[in-house]
Amino acid sequence: MYAALRTFGLVAMMAGPFAIAASAAEIMPPAQQNALIQKYCAVCHTDAARNGGLSLEHYDAAQADPALARMLLSKLRNGAMGAAGLGIPDSATRDAWVAVTAAQAERAGSWTVIHSAAPRSKAPVLTASIVREVAPRKPDTDAPAYRLTVACNTASRQGEMQLTWSPAPQTNRAFSVSADGNAAIPHSLKGREEKMGNGLALTTGLASTVLNVELPEKTLTIADLFPGETVVFPLGELDRADRRQLAACFPRGAASE
Image (cartoon, rainbow, N blue to C red; front, side, top):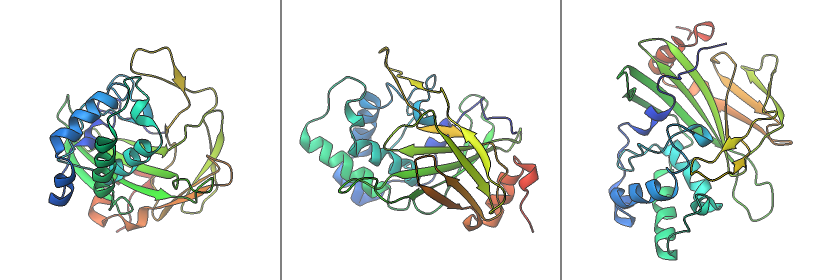
């Protein structure tokens, strides 16, 4: 329905004004976090592969995004440190990395709005992201997290609405998307997988998808991506001015005055 932001993807989400808090930096300085991300994460989450719907090649912990940090936290707590086949850090480093990421993720349940520039074209980019959690799928496990990211190249007026989830991948699955309680729009992940970006001949299920839906006024509901799970994103809580800018890339969901 809408042209995707293929010229810049969602790499631009890595920048923004949300500097890491001093207390978090004391747990682990941004430079050390960046080194860990580059060694254990960016090898698979490359510009080319964009596993999980994003690249971490340009990640900067000094400009942390709470919603992104929440998804990284889920991965760090659920085995992603060793996914690149490079081993894992020592226990003290692991604990500090998880702790600082948890601190950065504290505001993930509220909208994070970032103004940045596309890496190549330098076109202005506006992104808004938020995380919602659902009940744990098994006793004594983390709450699964869903992240919604709405991105708009305000120069070309190309937009993309992306859903990501963690900790488990998913594929060969039908689910539904509903804007403002209207009729559900069917979506499918059938037959789609991600290839590892580390040179290994491995594939995994998906951890992201682009949604084919208008920009809602109030709510976006995702149902049955995983059996029995429903998650509702509060589009109505976006700042009105930010929503108007995003709506330029989703004209049939233009913001009301």
